[in-house]
Every structure is written in structure tokens, then in C-alpha cells.
Length: 390
Image: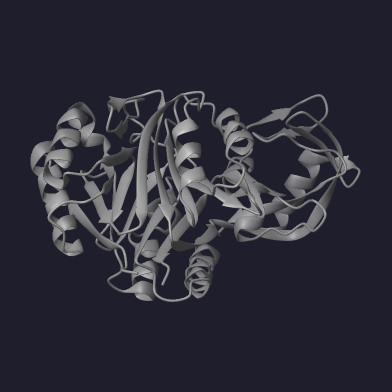
């Protein structure tokens, strides 16, 4: 079986038409294609007003029959991370025996039937890239719908967003350019995948037993007010100022409550979103479970870089050979804001995989299937690697 033919192009042009032509043309050239079966496009907020032009030029240049894309806080391609800067990144690909399918879904996730139909028809593996509008789509509702309607299909992706100044995100597909929607791309056929998930923070201290909780409020940890436990943890880290504490210390909730772990894909990290004065409780954007466990997580650039290196190495080892291409979904809170310098994650990926075509975006959150279920990650980097079987 022939390998995927995949290429990635990056443009820094401000003119959207020129940027689309340059990025798509470079992608086709790298892939050795005159046209592609499918295309994936990430574009910065500077191109929001001309997204229709971007779409038209990408379709004209690539001739693809499946297109998926969205606006982002920044794009990743050609070993470069362009945060808050003009950027258009395009991936183009095709392979014999691989069927692509793209669709624009409603904001409630309705419209998965075509993906189910193709999945039932094609033998081999399957994966779906989902790019929801992070400013309007109820991602928890969509996640539950995906789990119910396509339980055996791995989903990956990120929340489409802007750069924080406009308050608008756009999704792109064969049907047009929209907001309040979900752009999706499915690949079906003979290929293998590997996924790595890295955290921006690491667990500190011992895990805590949740002795009292209600809805999304942590009331007691190990029998003491949750706020007091957090303040004590902050003092151990030398964080006396509560505002700094609330910025640097987060909450890790294990996916497997029977065997709790707090690294990589094994836990979900959430920030502090408020205080409950009467109980001295901590409000977190997560449905907290009584009689479960959690850990305080410290946002740490040194440990984040080490974990990124661990994740990239492990993901590469999970494939039977070098990947044909990869997609990196990075949290908007990582990048320069985490490390204090640009290009850390893309440099680590390039150092491991060399010239393998990798495209990526900075999103509002990350989506990844782990332990058999799709999950909503935050403050993470999700690396999806794909290799043709045979």
C-alpha cells in the first residue's frame, strides 16, 4: 500500500487571497501533488473578515473534495508558531484506499449520520477531527452526543477561537464559512494512529480525598475547607499572594477514579473560577464528585517542557514506523505565555520527527479520545500522528 501523500504550507501574508494561494501551493509542492483529496486550514484572526476568500482560494488551488478549517489564536506549521500574528497554515493530503469526509455540523452536534455511514462502509481505522466554535458551542453537550452516536470513533481537535479582541470564531468547510458551528473532517481506511497528550502543569503535594462537594464546588478536602487546603499548598510553593496562587495553581481530576493518575492524558486540569464564601469552598468548571480524589497542579514551564519531550518520544514509539503526518492542537495558554519564548513545542516535535508534515493551531480547549472516551482538555498539547498501514 502506498503511503499518504501529505504536505503543509505556511503563509505570513496579510492579504488573505495571497496567503491562501501561498500556503496551499507550498503544501501541494511538499506533498508532490497537483491536487489533493482533503485539506485542513487554520487561519489567524487577521483573516477573519476575508475567510470566504481564503476558502475559495484554497478550494481553487487544491481541488480538494473535503475541506475543514477554523480561525485560531495562532497557527503552527513549517516548524514555526505564529501567535497573535498573521498566519495561514494549510495541510493537503490524499492516499489510495483512504476515504475523507468533511461536514459542517450544527452547534448542538447534530448531523453525525454521514460519518456513521462511511464508518460502517469502510474497513480499517477511522478518526474524526472536530473544530467547534469555542465561543458558542456547548462542548460538553456535543461530547456526550459524540459518545452516544459514534462510540467507537476516536475524536480529536480544538476549540476554534480568535485572538481575544474580536469575540468571533469562524469554521470553514465545503458548505461555506460559518460561526456557531462545528467543522469536521473524517478519515477512514487502512492507517494507524498514535496520540500524545502533555500537560502545562504538574501535580504537587499528595492527592486529596474529596470529602464534601456539591455540583462544581469543592467544599472539603481531607475533611478541611478546600480553600484552606489550597492556601496551604500555595505556601509550600512560596505563593503568598492569592491572585498569583489562583493563576499558577489549578486542579487535576483523574479520568480513572479507581486508579487515579495526574499526568498526560490521565487527568483533566481545570482552573479556579470562584470562591464560595459560606463554606470556604472552591468553584471549578468541572462536575465534582464526592468520595473521589484530586490533586493541586502547578503551572510550571520547566516541567511542561520536560513533559512535552516525554510525550513526543512516547507518541512516536507507539507507531510501527515513522508517521506520514501529524496535527498538533495546542492550548492558547501555552506557547510564549507559558515558556516565555516562542517555538518550544514545535521545536521539540521537529527535533523528534524531522521533515514529517505537521500542522497545528492554538485553540480555546483541546479534544482527545483517551481511555476509550472523548474528553475536553485544557492547558494541554495534543499531538495526533498518522501512518499508513502496510
